Amino acid sequence: MGFSDLSDNTLGLHILGSGSKGNCALVEGPEGLIMIDNGFSRREVLKRMHELDLDEHDVRALILTHEHTDHVSGISVWCRAFDVELYASVGTPETRRYLDELPFCEFLPGLSFEVAGISVRTFATSHDVVNPVGFRFDCAGDSIGYATDTGELSEDALDALDDVRLLALESNHDVPMLRCGPYPRYLQDRILSSRGHLSNAQAADAATRVVGPHTEQLVAMHISQENNRPSLAVRSFAAALGARLDDELGSTATLARDGNGPDLHIRAAGQNRPITIS
Image (cartoon, rainbow, N blue to C red; front, side, top):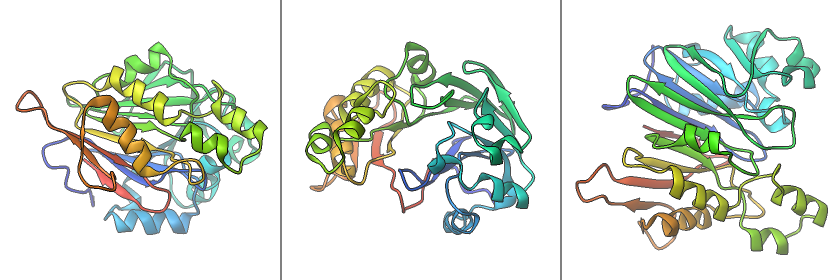
């Protein structure tokens, strides 16, 4: 298997793209890769995987957060080329014919299951779809939390994300930019609703509740290209958590814990720039 170097950690996260033009990420464990969503063409997924030295034949399963096109458009083509286990929340495959034709194992939000040696805990999110979910991945004492495309985080979601080592959390928009931007009012209101997307301020508030002594990496996800900037998301997290910006642009930030735990590193995922976090 062509797994990447995870140093001393059991799990790693590879984000191929995060945003309204396509979403796909891979959780890496000792027995293979779990793909989260697939909103790109097969050619684009393979290109981005190979940029990160990942082997497509190591993908063991594909799990869905929800059915919006930017998260699922590439799934049927991917499944014609690769045989993987498929998981989605109850009702999600039925929303699109090309998903309903595939052999998904459906689960209720809140249930847990094991894939490729990794325990996957699911939790309900809040989005304008049938049954959206987020995930917590655990393996051999290591953990990853993953929550995007949600207008709010429930107590159950916050509990699932609590003190994970690596946290991928939506920080979609800056409210003033959204309100002064080009989107029509109805779309602004949809994004700001409890079934829309987390703002920078909402994400930062959630981070203060779930970032714990074991959290080493915090990644801002699903950043709007029209209504946000990566630096704004990073700065919002940094201000809430007391982290120091690493450069004038504010592209990354670090919270040094002075020997009382690992440093916390804050960064942003992009739409077109695949990254590996371990």
